[in-house]
Length: 260
Image (cartoon, rainbow, N blue to C red; front, side, top):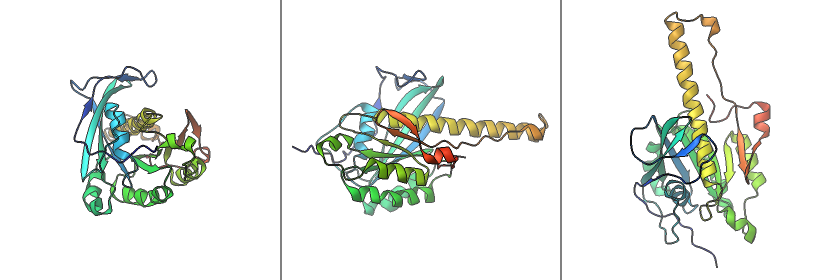
C-alpha cells in the first residue's frame, strides 16, 4: 500500500535539543536564550513533493500521513550550535501551487539559503526545478546557497523511481547546486541535507564578514592594500547515499550559486 505524502499545513514550530550530533561541530540546542545568527532558508518546489514534510522532519522530527497542502507561506525554526556560534535556522515553507507564486516570490528576499525539492517518483516535478531556479535567482541574493533535494527516496527500492540520480546530479552540476536525495518518511539524509546547507551559509557569511573587515582596514590605512585577500568560494558538492562526492563542476572550479 502506498503511503500518502501530501504536504501538511503547519504554523510556526520549534524543536528542542538533538540526542545525536551531526559531526563534531554540531550540537543540539534548546530554543532558549540569545542567538548569534538567524539564517533565513526558503524551501520551494512543486505542490505535494513533500516540502513541508522535510521541514517537519528537520525542525521537529515529525511526519504526518494526513497532511494538507501549504497555503501561502509558513515557517518553522530550529536552533543549533555551529562552530561555537548559536545559529537559528528560520525555514520558510512556500506553497507550490501556481496561484500562490506571486505571494511567495517576495519571501525569497533576504534568504541566505534555499532548498529546491522534487519528487523522485514524478518526473514532471524534476523538470519544473529549472523554473524554480530561475524564480529564485530572479528574487534572491546572488550569493544564496542552493540545495537540490530529491524527496521520497524510500520509494526507489519499490521500483517507483522516475528520476534517475544521474539526471539530478547532471542538473546540479550544470546549475552549480548542492544535491541530495532524502526521505521525509524515514528521515534518511534529511538532517544531513539541511545541516550541509547551514554549514555553507555559515561559510558564506564568514567570508563576507572577513572581506568587509579587510576592506574597512584598507580604507582606514590599517593594512597595505596589496595585502588584502578576497576569498571566493568555488565548492560544489553532491550528497548521495551517505557520502559527499565532488562533482565535475567542483573539479573545474566552476562557481556555484553559493559562491561569492
